[in-house]
Image: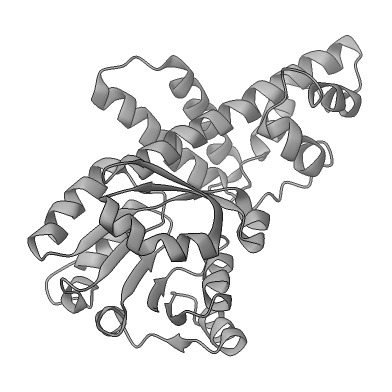
Length: 298
């Protein structure tokens, strides 16, 4: 299958690599030319000459970029006459957005593509860089069954667990809510460790205990020893992107009329993290901020 692939970042590149290893012909685009050149050389891929030509040359087009706004600009262009995907797509193509985009924006874009008969599914991913490299990520899919089945061989090459979440936008909604829970895990776990430390408990031993007890979570299992207690701060997922996903989750709650205090609390905590350390800081640096504010070192 010919895949036009846009976005060779921390998660995008290993996913693209697994698709290439599965035998798919890759046409790649990224704003970082060195990244494109390296991928082309390693996997015998083709560099895209532009977005329209990438779309014309592909059976399936995949985006995995930082924001939904980026996706819409790539698809539609910032202004009339811009190079964009839509100019090269027709009703024989399948478009997959694997970015963590806003579900409302996904639905709006879906209406535009529907007018041209272009199949569209959202398929954000979760699991981190190491699982992306191993091909064991979770993929949360939203869209029509026929389009999902068409994409299934690609998902099976890229991930281990493929979840059909519902109609278009359901994958993006699920991803935002998943990241809200993940963020709360970092916040609550760090707070628990700080309380324990002040009481006289050893944070490393406490983490081991939690991992064999009912309080274990993604943060205790995969972030405490690996990034927080050793002050490594290198999980591969930034505070800025976490804040973006938490804003999506908060907006989603508001759109349903639901009061969501936990979502608001953790979003505010990550807003402070971004304010202190910048959007490119690692999301685990929330724990760094809490240590500084509470004047307690883990």
